[in-house]
Length: 282
Image (cartoon, rainbow, N blue to C red):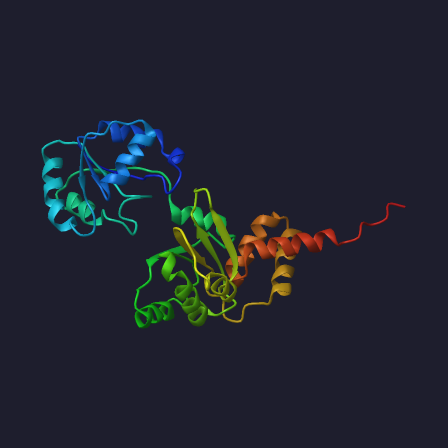
């Protein structure tokens, strides 16, 4: 039997796939980051799970060998985390690596992803992106990590704890520039879902009084050296549209080249189009 990595809902149980429900019910053993949360999910989904054991960052080394032996014995092992895909800033990498090294099959039951959802909602270019997980907690190490990313051209996605979010946004504004476009995605798929968009300076000011919930931060990549100002970039979008490219696609292309927000370019070009007077038909 293969090792099965299964994505779990990041907030709303209704996002659980039919495949996840099936795997939870059929697994011989479920390796769960937090067995209590997984049991609550199973109850919400109407699933009666089999044997469940804890598999988290503090016991990965000790439990991995046992799970590999279970796979060798033909047991169906399902790996889940509290939310999203195992091994993406969560436990799972060690087990996958051990299974691969033992020449055991590994497969995946895909599903919700905070990274992809935040990217889609951010309004920033998504054709190329980098996932950087959690930044270092210590201010000096965080500053050095951000300095290394100052020239990163791709859109960047980060996870952050709510109590560290204000300091992280302030550090980003200092290292990447206060005007760098960004978005803070909070409580995705939950009742109080919120997406805040703006410059890093604006977002740092907004977060200064405190932030609650699960946080994903999306930051625009560095603009091309000598990149044009917004009006010039809008003119570039208009030129592409005049050549027959759809406005949405043109805005995305110029956003990727200049570092401007795709939404800002799209909205500005659309507004400019609406201001062009209609030609008389007389």
